[in-house]
Length: 296
Length: 234
Ligand SMILES: Nc1ncnc2c1ncn2[C@@H]1O[C@H](COP(=O)(O)OP(=O)(O)OP(=O)(O)O)[C@@H](O)[C@H]1O
Ligand SMILES: [Mg+2]
Image (cartoon, rainbow over all chains, first blue to last red; front, side, top):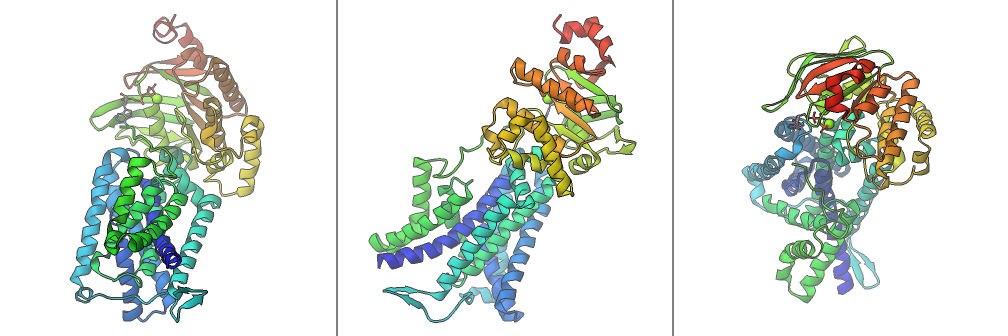
């Protein structure tokens, strides 16, 4: 029972970790907490369903197209809305609050837009990546879709690790997030990099949406799952990608254990509890670098 | 080679540069002196395309690069070594250097360039795998110069390279500036240490409150009474 709960916690934790990664990539590259990340997850779910049901795409094609469209959407939002707010290029500090407000605005807009579509009033369900009878393993039951989630999440994490550490573009993204001024001065196109970071993060949210939608009830409010992503990133101090993964998994497992040992009602408050606990005990998270002080 | 003609710049309503004209010729070291807040960094940032200028023009090698954007300016061959410790702290020293060659499409040439930079800064080679943030201040300054060299510049601009360094390290940095210059690189050098700067330069400009207050051959400036009083502490 405990083992079973732990395993299913790890599964959910993998998805929380992906959402956390999406948040942290944006935070590190543009200093903005993207409060619309949950809605990105949500629209990716609906988009996937639309592509499958309405346009009759097969599953793999749907995944590719959804992630691509989400990438484009995130990049476009950065280029059209945020870039305008940043105004002059390297004085982003002054515009932080408007940028965060813009992401909150976007989250309400997306939610509102989805609600307008009549069929979203009922609870919909996206079919999972892998379906079929569960796999039995000693006295543990593993759902195929859960195995799928873990495999996809791990592959994505490996791809990100390799990408950020060993490719020229990944290094340029990191350089831009660490020091945009210095990056610009060696000819790295900082604006394009910021756009790319948003695209990448939105694509990640898209993958999370496809993984999560079969497990949760799809509603326009499903974006609330962002709190779990935020909790997972806080554990990682909002700067560490490894911290996000560990944070997500710890959160998933703790949630399930609390569900067993405390009460199922307590599950919903777990992320807030963890956020508070981490902020009080270790304000920089368990893996974070010391928060950078902003020059004013 | 590089020519600024009557450029103006302001931050919001704060005027930072007023009618600044200056020129760096082929193979020259030209220094730009001035007190804190005079507008030296702003001048370099206008050239680098980080600060846009509402009027005036900047030309390089006969081409107009006014408000061309940072990427284009680097591509044209002007690279700035900024003031302070502007490195990528959690990346390795080698990654910092390789990023300097971001616009070099030829990876093999970039490798060769890296060896050249390592020859010039053996210390960086020893520290190649270490993360850049763990380097000492002097080493970080060397790293920034090395990173700029990786871009194969045709003209280098250095913003207060002696800032915060011990006298011995300042000597080393100036030796390196001379070495780079001896290879034929024109340099625009921003300094508060006027005496040192004038010793290596052939021409100098002095900024005061965003305006060029004096300019002339370095020898002449060193003799000048007013400059001596204001900047050389005589
Ligand atoms: N980003 C900015 N926003 C607003 N004002 C600025 C900004 N950067 C510089 N200034 C102002 O412009 C003027 C010139 O600054 P600049 O940095 O060019 O001086 P500097 O000569 O490089 O000084 P220092 O020797 O201290 O580096 C100063 O009055 C400064 O306060
Ligand atoms: Mg300065």
